[in-house]
Image 1 (tube, rainbow, N blue to C red):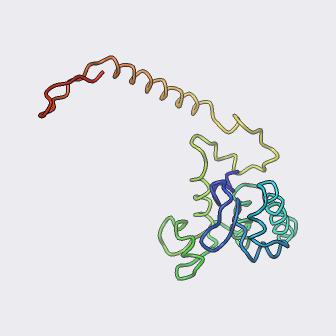
Image 2 (tube, rainbow, N blue to C red):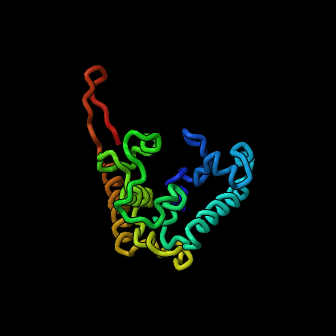
Image 3 (cartoon, helix red, strand yellow):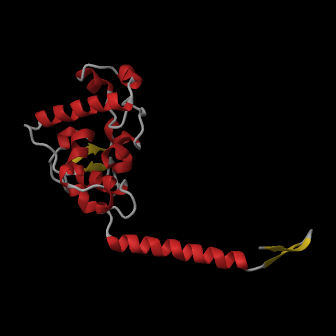
Length: 190
């Protein structure tokens, strides 16, 4: 889900180069899957996901059957398959290329190159607050979904902040505040 959120904010949308859907299938990739972007747009989300799955299976075949072992590797496989399982220093895009222009936001250190480490940083930025990012390093089938992703300490801190905000709001409501208005005199809030 985080990979699809990173690609499309979990929406069936097109980008500036005409790629479409949750994993942004490009027109040429769609043709390789036996469909056009126009036909993909007509599909339900379930129909689209069949083609997303087929795309990922094709990329795994290209990688000699080596399946991704983390969300980072899955994103490499989807976003830029040539970078799949390459070191963090691997350069995906360099300044001056159209690909760099379209992915300039991933150049976090502004050195004119987008490297695998920066793509991982991008995936991290798409995680929900308090998400245990170590979960991104585990194969999906080994995870227990839902609450496992949240550490108990983070939950306690979150609940404490909400309680403090609610108490503060109650105190604010009970006080009377005078505001001086030059045109209408004094009036009270609360």
